[in-house]
Structures are given as structure tokens and as C-alpha cells.
Length: 306
Ligand SMILES: Nc1nc2c(ncn2[C@@H]2O[C@H](COP(=O)(O)OP(=O)(O)O)[C@@H](O)[C@H]2O)c(=O)[nH]1
Ligand SMILES: [Mg+2]
Image: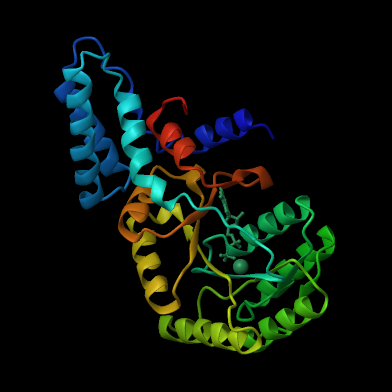
């Protein structure tokens, strides 16, 4: 896909969240009214009070500058620039480097999109001529192991799995040993999103991390938290909780296409400062995009990326 097509998909995916009001001030509307519309739009898109206040303060500073310099007022461009500055620190894609295998532990609640994201990531790495191995670490749900193994068979990607109910940490340990022995480039481990209680889940995930570190102390190289954007502000709270217990190193924010709450990406960038690695804007493989702050800000503000 070309850069232009990817942006078109991103725009389409963010259509429900787009801050529609941020185009030129319609005839008869005052700038003050237009600004108020933008603020309402941010709040409705689940950006949250704190981050909205921050964005609006910056927005007004930039607007004042534009007015002082007698430049034409294009609110969409001012908004784009403001959002870009907020998102820019989170614009840090994964870099594999020379580590072999580069080890990614996927975490997140049930239904966030972990397993489908693993499939998309595996295909992406393979297309870049990397060898990939997966581990079916969600051993809690019967269908979960099968979902990943069937997918692996169909796509010719090896999957290490045991029966449902097996110890997640031991499946992932076996997988990592095997990936190391076979000189695999990228090893990705799936995990459960729900056990009997939230504490059980966090304890299990911490155990997985410890067990991996017994094999190779610097692993996992990436703890990638998958968040469902349609959870809005709840996604922010999940991220805080996972980060506290697991030490998250990167985020993948899915399902931006189905929701008007995509503004939570701004809240997450502002309040957590964690790298946003990928975003999901649809079901197809091309819809898992590497996060790009300028493209995202532009698509949200209804402006062209410069
Ligand atoms: N529309 C849309 N659906 C998604 C996206 N990512 C995942 N899904 C869907 O979300 C559902 C749950 O995904 P799954 O990977 O099984 O979640 P898991 O429980 O975290 O492993 C599936 O139906 C996926 O197709 C996305 O970016 N956009
Ligand atoms: Mg799953």
C-alpha cells in the first residue's frame, strides 16, 4: 500500500472520532463559537477533562500567534499542529535491532484484539523477511489455543501450544527456548485477558515475565499492551493498571474504526507518555498501522499531513 492509501484508510477509520467542527469557521460563526465546538468535540471523543484543557490552552496560544501575524485562520491546521505536539513524544515505532529472537509479550483484557493483532504482526514481520514463531499463552479459554494454532497452520507460521488448562508460563518458556534454538527473528507470546480474578491475571502475567527472564534476562524486549479504543477512558485506566504491575513498553490501540471515542489516544499519550507502536483501524491486515503522530493528528483534525 502506498503512503497515500494508508492515510486514506486511517482517515476513514477515524471518521467517527474526527473533530468535524475543526474546519474553516462557517460564515456567520464567530471564532469563539468555533473554538467552543472544538472543545465539545474533544470531550465527546473521550479525550477527558485534563487533556482537553491542555489541548485548548495550547490551541489558543497558537491561534493568538496566527492572528497577531495576520495569517489566515485555518482552525483545522491549528488543531492538527496542537495535536501533533501532544502525540509526538509517543511516536516511537518498534525497532527490532539485531537481537534474536526479538521477544514480544502481548497483554491486555479479553476481546481487546490481542490474538488478531498477533496475526497481523506476524504477517507484517514475515513480509519484511523475518522468521516468526508464536506461543499460545492464553491457555485459559478453550477456543484461544485453537484460534492461534489454526491461524498458524494456515499462514505457515509455527505455533508452540499445549492443551487448554496448561501452565501459560511453561508454554511460553518452551516457545522461547525453541525460537532461540532455531534462530528465529521474532517471537510473539499470546496471553490470557481474564482469569478468575484480576489479581490472578496480574500474578500469572508477572510469572510469565519472570520465567522468560530465567531463560534470557533481557526478555521480553517488548511488553505490548493491546487496548480497545471503544472502551474510551476505561482504556486509559486499564493502561495505568497494566503499566503499574507489568511495566508496559509499548501500546497497540485497536478498533479505532468502530468508535467515536478515539480521542482516548490523546489522553493516553498525554497521561502515560508510553510509546504507541500500532493502531488498528479495521479488520484487514493493512488496517494495523504503525503509529505516526503527524498522520494521526491530521486525520483527526480533518487536515492534510504536511
Ligand atoms: N473493527 C475492528 N475489529 C478489531 C480490531 N482489532 C481486533 N478486532 C476484533 O476484535 C475481536 C476480538 O479480537 P481477539 O483478537 O480475539 O481479542 P483477544 O481476546 O484480546 O485475543 C475480533 O472479532 C477481532 O476481529 C480493529 O482494529 N478493528
Ligand atoms: Mg485471544
